[in-house]
Length: 505
Picture 1 (tube, one colour):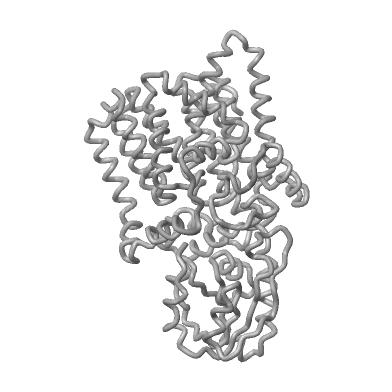
Picture 2: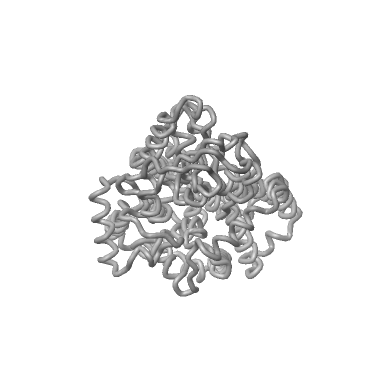
């Protein structure tokens, strides 16, 4: 079917298809991630924005669950972006002067780079950047090579959509513009089409910004909160080390690309953009994975350089590709849910020991480490929690069931119970977007409280009694053994108490 299509198209299509299929087969295991459940529930309440994320990921998550809970359909969404990102990476290789081998090698490295594999594994706000950041780069490179200036309008459209996916793309765009300004390629900015592209992006993102204004800039409030408690702050040296860690054993490929870009006058702006982006993340104490969608173009440059080095040694090329695959497989089980949990826990421990590091070295938040990698630990315990809460609810007298509402301490617990319970239980929480949804008309007279905060809640009820505790294998320690408490006889109207439940982080 692909006969007659040039390598410039055939290899990107083949690489993207293979990446998509592998993700679709490997992604839907263990269970829903707590964030995924939250995105689904948020997307079922369409809005221009949410307290802690723009709307694209939640809306895609909800759309994938139109016909009922399906982990396969949910995880097919990030798989699609992973495949699309690899397709665009291959096109970047062509624009940088590479041929078939550079395309194939770059596709392999991008697929196996641990942080990028993780982005394509679960539905999250980072997944769109797998495709949009490389595509922004591709179009900018084409403009520097003489493409029609009207391409700026497409860049503006893509930039606007990207900002509705994750705000960090704005820092990438700033880094690209500054990189251009530092080199002769700044000439492409001297165009009314560039100004129009900025206006287009701004118009698309404007409703999201106005939503933030309306609700008092909750995203800024969250960013301040996490930088003064939740997130781990690191210095510049450690941050650079983390960039190597999230690259696994494949970091040499993008480092080679970075050096190649520095030495190429026509593409040096891309190297400058990377350095500026990392510097901004250091200053702003961004998490180590925030700039990770930038690595495909560095890897593409690395593929071009390696192809050049091996032009007279073609027999070496298959060996280099094989080594890339083997190095990628080392970290593959800790970013793709392909191993049974017991095997993974042992492998994860051995991997840290072999590399002389601990999970604390690369943790981005202050929390007790789990036996499994963080993402995978967050895929456990939600069905068990929902089953326990359903049982506690069913044990209530019929007249109390009509009044009962579930109060969860965090959005993952709340979303799990709201989405997975059958029939749907009424759920409220003070955490992030749930706080803005309020008590949802509940009187709070009968409250099923989930989490460690139930002790505080008991002070405003006449009676409270613990009915169960959550115990499930492989889950995050912070969720293990949390109480499920039934409280009755609220002493003040729930609507009056609601402002006290606010918890943004």
